[in-house]
Amino acid sequence: MYDPKSLKAEEFIDHAEILETLEYAEQNKNNKELIEQILEKAKPRKTANGTVCSGLTHREASVLLACEDPELIEKMYTLAEEIKLAFYGNRIVMFAPLYLSNYCVNQCVYCPYHHQNKHIPRKKLTQEEVAQEVIALQDMGHKRLAIEAGEDPVNNPIEYILECIKTIYSIKHKNGAIRRVNVNIAATTVENYRKLKEAGIGTYILFQETYHKESYEKLHPAGPKHNYAYHTEAMDRAMDGGIDDVGLGVLFGLELYKYEFAGLLMHAEHLEAVHGVGPHTISVPRVKRADDIDPSTFDNGIDDDTFAKIIACIRIAVPYTGMIISTRESEACRNRVLGLGISQISGGSRTSVGGYAGYSSDERPHDTEQFDVSDQRSLNEVVKWLMELGYIPSFCTACYREGRTGDRFMSLCKNGQILNCCHPNALMTLKEFLEDYATEDTKEIGEKLIADELKKIPNEKVQKLATEYIENIHEGKRDFRF
Image 1 (cartoon, rainbow, N blue to C red):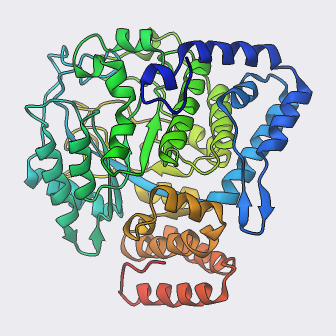
Image 2 (cartoon, rainbow, N blue to C red):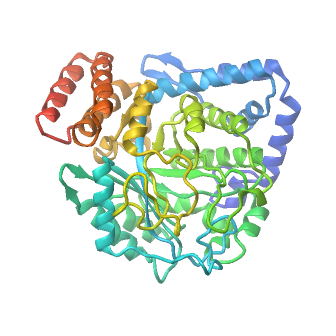
């Protein structure tokens, strides 16, 4: 029985409810009147307290996803962009993954780190190697990392992860500093989540891979990850452990995308119903080629048109949630979906253990990669590209360090304070990047962008102060924030 307030995985991700939802969506995919009503409900509305959006239920959003009318699909795309601009503006937050270890005891059939893979080199970074990787990332200009590690209680215990986090935060090289560490590790206990919270992590990220229980168990034939309920209920334990920013995601291509879409939104509804705040982020990875993994063996792959539609529908359904797209996707694909709801992207990424230190921007080791990187441009190139498209590349971590997480961040987002807070913070961190790491042509574009965007800050006091801070950054000072 479907119950979003239940703490049991099979009740808040109810298989029968998903099947009924998909049947309802199929029956109404050409119901223009209903679809227009759903789109109208989802539109941003101005109130005395700022701009608000109602979002959509998983069933309403599934109708949009099923829609085949080109004119209505274009309306979806327009609405998705309107919602994105209303709550996140033209900012795109930058981050990079840092792979700590590829030792893993699981047997996930879509990941080259699976335990049966005997020819892939196994590697675990020492703390000295972690420090070198962090320096390399700082020298690119990164301020925000997402650390990754396989599940292995012997080689990658929680103590190792905590030690790595401590090392990452301790490294200050030239003007570089990692100000936010997000963590993407296997489902664990409330006690361990509490330790991660105490270590100062930002968001805890865990991809569901698939919400279809039968498929999930086949895709994870052995290892701790085989336990569907334990994995699916991890976000509740994380929130019980004090982590109020959590990130969801499915690996599109493993199961039918409409099923995954409904399950993903049901999970978001569950977190809102139980904890009062939905996911901080949603990621949309697709299965990609890697060491001994051939994506063509999975028969549920989605094309770029479907991918774009999924992103737009997620943005409409969960308007306040950040959306992430990684370097799994090509420049062309990322270009297409930026305006449909994406608010965070990675840049200059390496998906191998020890992939940054000692390598130039056009070199990359492949022997321990978790997946092929499609967008192989340097961070400077990605930043320049974003600015040429009219976006503000942001290295901001202010909300996390000011305690604006969980429902406090959502409140900020909902009451329209983005332009007076996140917008100037983005400009100041971009200025840091331009001063410390950018090439001259990137810097020239960025300086003009900053000058133009400062004028858009509605609060005169904030605008004046942000202008002063940016002048101070030019003089060599760092780390201002609202």
